[in-house]
Length: 170
Image (cartoon, rainbow, N blue to C red; front, side, top):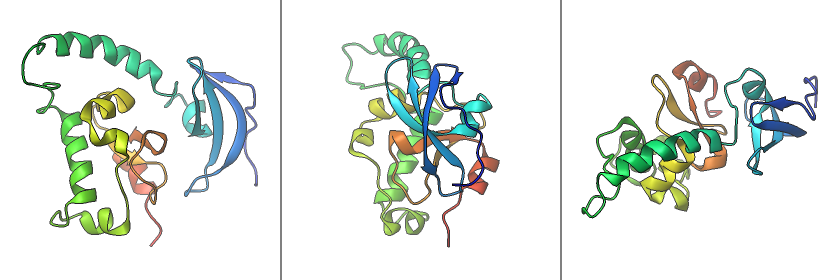
């Protein structure tokens, strides 16, 4: 598999490295991590070592859940489902669906036409935001495997520069 830094058993944030599982499309070493919440997830080891990723997503979700509860409480009893249709994260969710499902979308040829799909769970915006959390300023939604689908195990928030390095092979 080549050279890599052995972090087996080491702890980073809420994650403990279990084992190397392979390489991603960019030939970066993927590790299986166990989170304090019990979930296991395959993640680029460098992202964990450098502190870009500190949990399986549960940490952000725990922060979000308190804010979301306060936000959603305002709409209890109304016809609104989440009240977030004018937020940046909703725009990301909507765009993701459109480029995968709408042949009239200018980017469909790079997504839906190539078979890229959005997982069933993310058909509901509430599930998407529960998995990904709000969009951090300056970051965009990225698929770890550019040929893979939009799903929790294959997506993260990334800078534009990080996305440019993670492109589908032509």
